Image 1 (cartoon, rainbow, N blue to C red):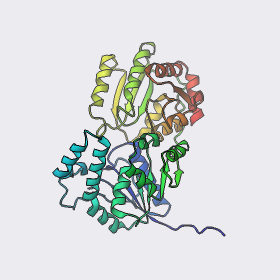
Image 2: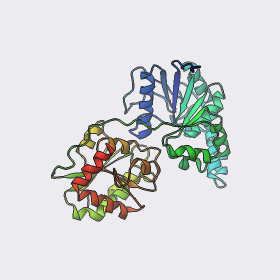
Image 3: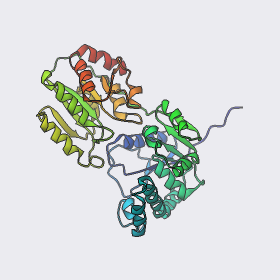
Image 4: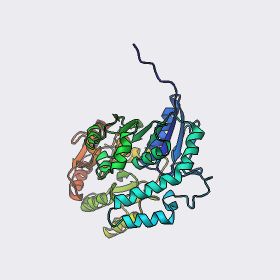
Length: 382
C-alpha cells in the first residue's frame, strides 16, 4: 500500500542568534526557509533575538519573521538573553565555573530557558507550528524545556558533530535523544553522531550549492592573480592567519599574485581582524593581502579569482568552499578538516595538505605556477 504523502506543514525554524550576519549558517537558514516556502509549506524563522533585523540574505516574501526573545516581554533588561540572567543566577554560575566551565554554561542556559519560557510560549502559540527545526543543540534544550513533547523538534547540527558532541552533557544528550530527528550535513557524520550515543533517527541532507557559471579566465594571462578566502573572520575555526603566513613564504616568487579575505567580522572576530592586519604589516604585504569585508555579489568575486584557499580547522559542510568549486575554482584545504576533506578530491579538484602554513604554501605554489593545472582542477569541481 502506498504511503500517504504528507501535506503542507507549518514549520518554525529556531535560529540561535540574529540573521544580520553574512555567515554560512545564516545563508543556510534563509535558503532552507525559502525552499520550504516554495514547496508549499508555511514557514516562520524565529531568531533568538527579536526586533526587525536587517537581513543580509534575501527571504521569500511569504516567510514570516518572529522572535524567540520577544521585545514585548518587559522583564528582559538587555537585547541579549545571556545578560538577562538575574544576579543570583550569575552568582551560582560563577561559583560553578572554577569546578566546571561546562556546568557553569549549563546552569546559565537553564536560567535562560526559564527567562524565555513565557516568550517562547507566546511565539509557539502565535504560529502553531507542526514541526520546529532547531539550529543549535543548546537551543533544542531550551525549546524542549518550554514545549516538551507538544511539537516535534528536528535538531540540525551545522558544524562537525565531533566538535559539537565530544563534550556533550548528559542533559543535552538526553535532549537530542528526545527530538524527532537529528540532521547532519555530510554522510560520514551519521556514524559520528551514532558513536556519541544518539539513538534518534539521524539523517544526512547536504547543503544545496548555487550553480555558478564556471570560471573561464583561469588560463588567461593577467596583470594580477587572486587567491581568495570567503568565511567569517574568526581565529579558532576559520584561521585566516594561516593563509597569511603561507602566502608570506612564497609572495616574493609570485609578485603578480594577491590574497583577498571576504567575510563578516562584526560578531565573532573580537580582535582577530586587528591581529590579521598586524600580521600583514609584519610581512610587508599591505599592498598584496586585503581584508575586504562583505559583499552582496560574491559570484563576481569567484568569477575574477584564481584559487580558493580554506584553512579551516573544522566545518559542518563548508558553504563557501562548495560555492567556489561550483564556480570552477581549484581549492586548497587541510586533510585534517572534516567536510573539507570530503568536498576536495586531492589531486583532482584541488589539494588536501598536512597541517601548518608550509604545506599550505607548497600547494598554493603548485597552482600559482601552473595555469593549466588551475583550469583542469577548477573544471573538475565545477
